[in-house]
Length: 60
Image (cartoon, rainbow, N blue to C red):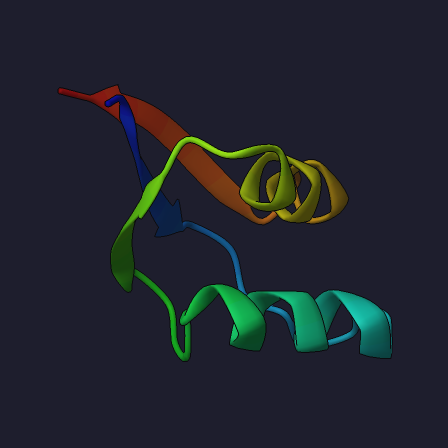
């Protein structure tokens, strides 16, 4: 199954509260944190919400 490598590239300071909550739900706590999640619609939706704060790569 394909996995997503999600990296927080920008700070959440000054962003909306739901963006902060979404980052926390993904497991990202600070700048340059990296998490690997399964490629599922739930995670794709979360990433779409904070797409301006993260970068995403597909990992096998």
